[in-house]
Length: 283
Image (cartoon, rainbow, N blue to C red; front, side, top):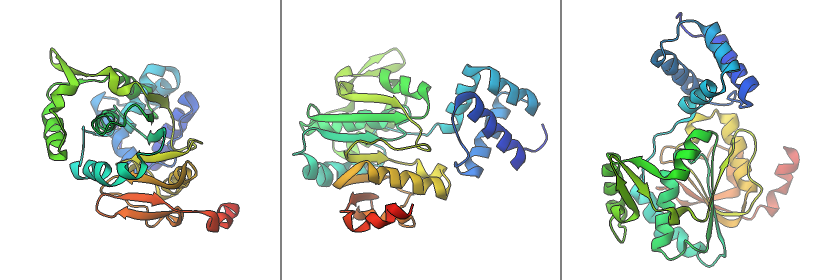
């Protein structure tokens, strides 16, 4: 296949929008193009027109493509110091809330959701917590709901958990089944898994904590701005937002609604926006 150009990528975006109702037009172009090319190479696709036609006519094929585009590498307790900050700084500030409302945005295959559930369980807060876990891709949501992962991946997960300073062994939270592990269903009793596209809208609920880690880097500046604004509208004063270690909201106009709670761990606190209402009127 000849080199893929801007017009070709736009045709792929249009085909996915037409067939699946998913709009990737505000995703970072370089990242989107790189993942499309990878998909073409893996599947040895040489004809772009046939590729576009299959996107439009084969739902399973289109869903697999979306999975390739949106997949994010994740781990249990990734960046352990972030989870230490949640445990030692954030949870003491919101533990009196009942329920504690948490949103895992773009949760991918769910390792972060189970990490949060374990954190809450060890803090004796799981029963009073309600978690909404969302992702654009239904396939990875199904993985998250099942809580079944490869046994090999637990090596890294266990190291992260140890560095986090968990009260037990990570293996206490799952059962080994052949070459996989199955995490305890009890951990997700209060989790609501939903298909949701951050590019379209936020969730009109008041969350005490929103985690959207290592996702914003895949969006262009306009979409990052929109997402942070939507997060702000889904948070009450004093609630918290956690993003990835290589991400920042400083440049966003919507950053005026947040203060840095932990610069090192990229955790922000929602401030009283009453004095900023004119900003929303302008938008």
